Image (cartoon, rainbow, N blue to C red; front, side, top):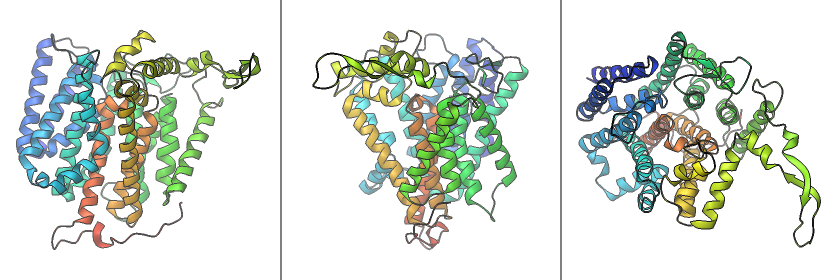
Length: 501
């Protein structure tokens, strides 16, 4: 039943993708496919919830492609409608099949703590819809966050009940990388691909109907479980190692040639050094990440990197009038060239400055309301629809309260994953999967700085499933089934800290 249901769901998702690739404008077909996929997901909630987890990855494998499809008189895109429907189906599957995991206060408390970054911000976001400049934008953000939380809950509940299926989830993450690659190939054969217009040099930084920077971002995330798998698993193999290695090489080349600077910094500075050097202490991990990001930044600013800089680095700090604290009058000193910074960041710093100044002067503590940044950003950049920074977005929308919740819960989560990694033998499943999730969270937290992954299901969906695998494996190790020893719990005592490398 699982294969039959998911194959049907996948066929409909691919049919949606075909509408975009072939530029087929058909309201009737769009409505039929939307209704059919929602119906299949509801059937999956009753008959086989695992098909919903696979569909979540399949939907993530076509990054925001369906956002160009709309149904008349519906305020949300087909992509938004399907994300919300997947959340409803996932929540329904939990209610039908896994109610027993949420019966006691202890169970509910642990679930909320495990998923804290996905859950705790939601009540405050709902409260801050009051007075939000656009209720549609507010509802859109909340629906995406609720869906991510529901997908995480379903994944965690399913893998707690079926721990032998966690390995299948890891395989599915690998196969997810094949879907956008296939879409790119078809796009190229159809003649829809053109080279990135920010450079005159030919490269694989292709702008497809799937999005020029969205695809390498997803690839950067998918590299995490693949690299950890290659680094950790030696003798016992569940997939052919050379296939995974080949896909890692392809994705790495694509990330490099995508010409997206932050994706390369986050991938080469966080994912690669952490997965390959395998540090076993927090300070070494922080040092490795810092050095990795610094080296990547230097590489990107060098002539070797194929994407030219529109602003030279020495023009960012210039000599100019400066006033020293406590002194009167002007003098010569160093100052930041704001125009150069705006050019280097493609206008981001100008937008951030406007939003931060507005937030500080008007609604510092409570924020302007959920989704407000999407409205106000047009005052600084007419053609923009988001601020390109989740930290700025949360601060502007939800104020200091929201930003404190956001930063604290994500910091708590990544440190918890790291602590679990240290507690168990490095080669155990529980250690490896928590380590994988920790790297993935690190990648996302860096990427939050200049993008809006928080409202991109194609990023947060796979991340939520990586977190669900890690949390389910931890529960399996700490509370094994009665009379059933597990590999992860065979050596539950804390492991000694080992040197990195």
